[in-house]
Length: 68
Image 1 (cartoon, one colour):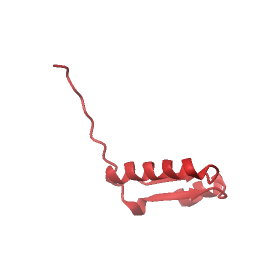
Image 2 (tube, rainbow, N blue to C red):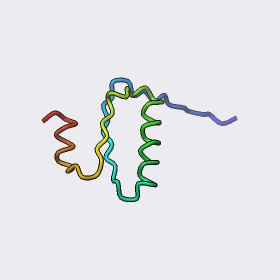
Image 3 (cartoon, one colour):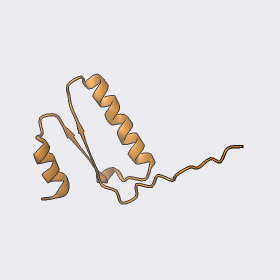
Image 4 (cartoon, rainbow, N blue to C red):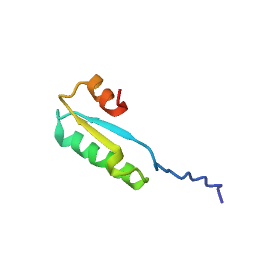
């Protein structure tokens, strides 16, 4: 029997930002749904996830997320 090593993914207290393009939204919105599902399953609070859509400059997004 092989030795199976499993980790515990705990996102408690983690703050995340996801940047999503509206180009090819059929694909990118499914990727967003998958990313949100993964974060929520691993104890990241909904209020700690920011989503920036296309049209928001990357610098502006980083300022919003970091508060600087």
